Length: 290
Image 1 (tube, helix red, strand yellow):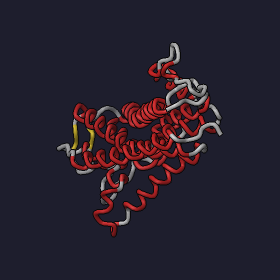
Image 2 (cartoon, helix red, strand yellow):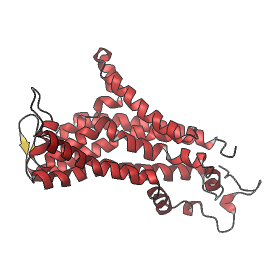
Image 3 (cartoon, helix red, strand yellow):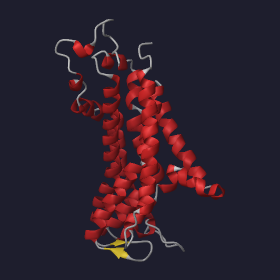
Image 4 (cartoon, helix red, strand yellow):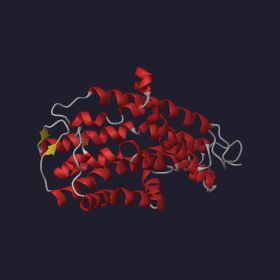
């Protein structure tokens, strides 16, 4: 694949001193994305959310009990319970936004700034540029997904103490058992969001409008959630990524259940492979000069 800015008939692979493997190092891309204002804003919002929820509990009191016990009703039981509550609140929407933002803004923003052509003129091979940007986007997405329950654990422990993780079913896990189970739950949430990351990334390669790429991925997540709520669809709902988004709760059971999480991860990664293939194929033919 020829690079933008290379003279006709000259292959960058044979230029003196040129090494494709040395272009756009991870460290450079990580620092570039870390310095973005949206990265700081997302990090600040996610770090502040546990404090906001803590303040809400302090003002309104302990969550009331209903006929069906939930993680929210057990939030004030211990630090691990508060962390599980933050993960419960984040799943489905709050954590979708940073994943879509980090992966959907990365290429489209460069195109909107007209800096994409200069990156390719470096010359950075197109496939390498996409791989670097998507992997860095996933790295920041992983940090965002981990940050919310991690801060929740710290804030909850400071406010409610360190103790067992009480489960909605009535049983409990010791704090020593709860931490690795929470880690499994966080890992599942991240892997289940890979499909959103891949969709946002594909849209990012197809448009010069970052908001369109990010908004399109978030909108698709909302639509699949709405469709999953339609019980008349029956078994077809099992093909929707949103159908499995709360399967991480199976990790927080007296006996860990892997079935739902494995199905959710398999579906997410399968869709992601197709979407990434579309992104690489489309970007390889895209005119980034005009």
